[in-house]
Length: 197
Image (tube, rainbow, N blue to C red; front, side, top):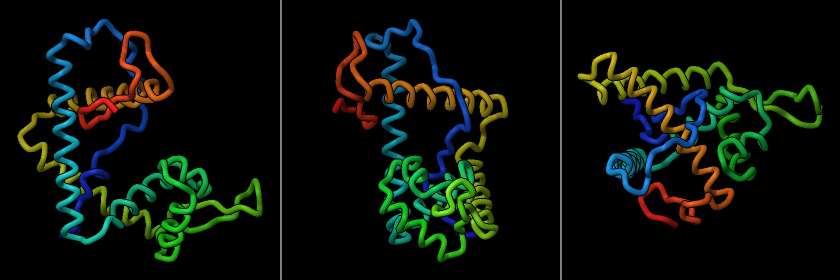
């Protein structure tokens, strides 16, 4: 595991399941606390982007990031068809097919016959793929252990709960804004980098 670089984008773990926040009484237009959270999120995204740029400069490509996203998704949702995988990772089928073909050739994924439709195949993570996921998970844990050094267990538990809650609410709200205007709110979808696009 020594020397394994952690992609800062894939290192940010997504919660397995969390209920979206319900709309409350928070006055979003006047709250300096809300502005502080928004500014902090923008700062976090910029920091992750800078870290990813450093990683790409060091490795010369983004294969590791793509590999981790695809492997983790197949491990969590698989066995899965390539078309469903493409939807899950928000990519087009031709790109995912090319990427998964490389992972199959590398022994990290395997194709299995679809028991429902014999003409189709399902992608599944191999033992070698599980080993890669495990190694990356250990590297990610070591990275975040350094990031969170000095936090006490109560702070960590509270931060994890609040971050999961925030992430679920962010996704829920952004999805709703993309679907159509919300009364009393701007009609445009918010750009997480801080602008309204």
